[in-house]
Length: 273
Image (cartoon, rainbow, N blue to C red; front, side, top):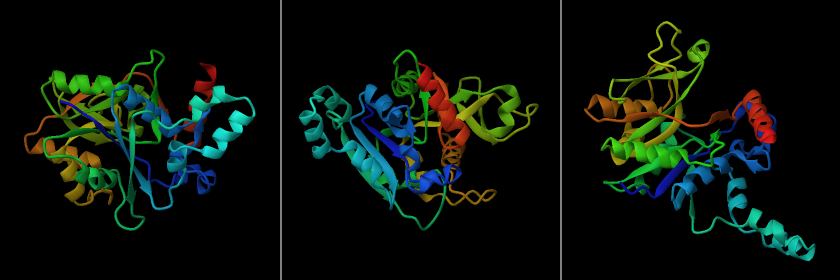
């Protein structure tokens, strides 16, 4: 399985982070001296991914600016004798960046950007999908993208997802993964009680998806219980039709940057490294 593409949805308004997200796109909020989304980008690049597709909102400009060359800044750094800073702002070497615009009207939910990306995925192809407002901090400089691809391949499959361990007392806050004895995905149980939780693995929104799942994300209706278009419904439908999706446990500390508390925790952690 040769995976060459990563889909990174970043179109959300970040309403939990208002008012700052009125001016700064949620995925561009700084963690240390880098935007949140760049931690995701660097992880997929370590895995050899060379085509990155950002699914952006209609108002998005900041991600485009971050990943393109800034000639004026380059000239300023040279004039000030700060050439050593140039590698920090250089465009990604050997990586093609693509932008898919998600309309502001229409459905809402995690399957919308996945469905929009489906036309860029070939019939026999799988691709990485990682939400762009979170990342997993690793001290070992490893790549979770590499690890997930390896896991999927080791099971002879073309789809997989990660879960991250949460404390027993916190399982009722998350969508918890149920898997079978072979580590194959069964379903996600939304916010179960501790007693009824099938595991303590929160869905990490970190996937290898095949073309069939991309198409299900594009075509399935909204979840009737919540009124949102959810990528987990595409996974549920795929498994119900006989497909298999392997579940792994992600490495690293979960940095959820879509809330003030999570964003502050991420910055404190990176500052301490």
